[in-house]
Figure 1 (cartoon, rainbow, N blue to C red):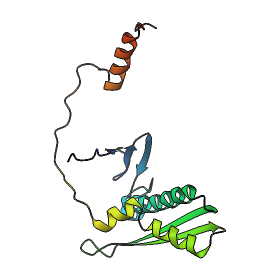
Figure 2 (figure 1 turned 135 degrees about the vertical axis):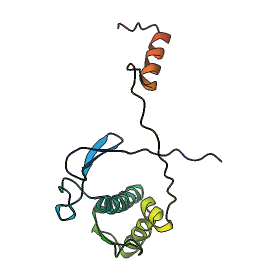
Figure 3 (figure 1 turned 180 degrees about the horizontal axis):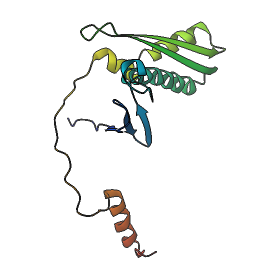
Figure 4 (figure 1 turned 60 degrees about the vertical axis):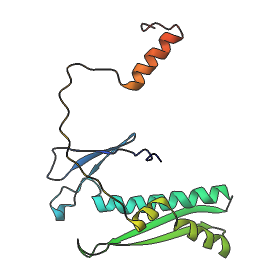
Amino acid sequence: MTEPLGETIVIDETGVGPFQVEVKAGSATFLVDEPAQAGGDGAGPNPYDLLSAALGACTLMTVRLYARRKALPLQRVRVMITHHRPGLGAKDRFEREIELHGDLDAAQRAKIFDIAMHCPVHLTLERGSEIETRLVPPPAPAAAMTLGHHARDIAVAGEVVGLSPDG
């Protein structure tokens, strides 16, 4: 069985403040920082905020997907996450509150609750994860810019259909 493809998120130091980093996730770029009381500049959410946001966003998206598929009268969903972290050696706890707005009956609300308990991030946090870490050397300086695979493939495809590189 082959291992599923992973998604790589790139995190780089910005050089601004002691902790601020830039995160590139797909087409999104955002800052992560520690709050001022922890020695940062507070320029963005901290790593635990992102963990809470991942759980909350996944919960909301999972509920919304289910409600759309079942044509439920769910008008709006709001999720609030509170992260309790008693210490590095203790087990963290997340409190999740879900507001459902719409004319839903008790059975629909119960099913949505059950669906929320199965959002992928919830399941990942609940079962735990393996983390593999390795040091890698920095890339060697590039001698010249090269086309990425996609750009190369587009150029080749253009030649196949008779388009010249000059247009």
